[in-house]
Amino acid sequence: MNPIRTLDRPIAVAPAPRDLDAQRPARRRRTAPAPRVSTALYRTRITHLRRAPVHHYFEQSSYSWFVDLDALPRVPRWLRPFARFQARDHLWDAPVDTLRGRIDAFLAGKGIDLRGGRVTALLQPRVLGQVFNPLTLYWCYDANGVLRCVVAEVQNTHGERHAYLMPPTSTDRPAAVDKKLYMSPFTGVDGYYLVRAPEPDERLDVTVSLLRDDQPAFVATLRGTRRPAGARQIMAMQVLSPVAPLMNKMSMRVQGALLRLRRVPTTPHPNARPARDRRKIPSTSLMRCPQ
Image (cartoon, rainbow, N blue to C red; front, side, top):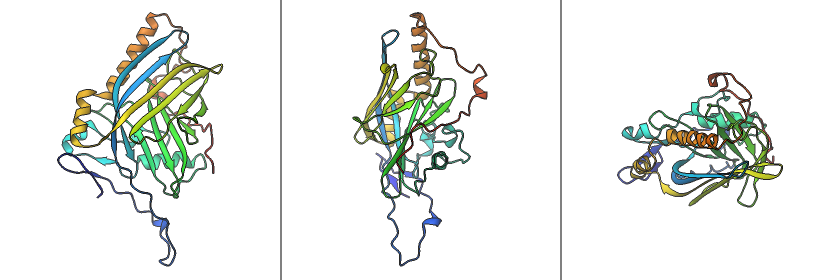
């Protein structure tokens, strides 16, 4: 197993499954496997700025995990309640039960085959049974190490999800995607997003802007610094941001209550059925990755 170095002992990661179809005769040169990405934690600062119809700003601290989907962390048993990575928490439309398999199935539905290339993700695992990922990002590379596309999976407080397929983005080259999922009664489903989501290194810097009539109505940022995914850091995150998924959801509800007190106009949910009946939402590609 490939260990992740920690303060006291290594945290093992699951080995990537062997691709039997990729085996070739001994005389032929085989493509070298993509280098394994080190699991990391990012201590993050989340900001929301609403520009219309009222000016409203808030920020909070949290954290995110950065992982290689072929080598998800296996934390010690005593830490598992604080970091459970489960495929069922992502991409509900996918027919397979591994997170890597689900992203491959999603991409296959859009005509994209990574041929075993690396996929990294920024996400929040289950913490004490709680999970809430307003935004999960996947960076998808082909077998030659070329970044083919980025998938942005969003979740609202009703438990609904939608996955947006985007070309690679950078701080100076955002991707534009039409908004498809009802995220808040204060924004409705009109407008489009500009997404800047470069793969993080020592710094994490993601910006999502919602535009209406080509004017920014809402801007969210996610910024943070990289830290090793050791036992001490995992526990430190639980102290700094206890039960982060639950706290993030509660924070959004509190901000919603404040906006209602300010009499901000609301748009009702387009589908009045219970949330359990709306879990599966078609994931429509809005921008195709370069072939």
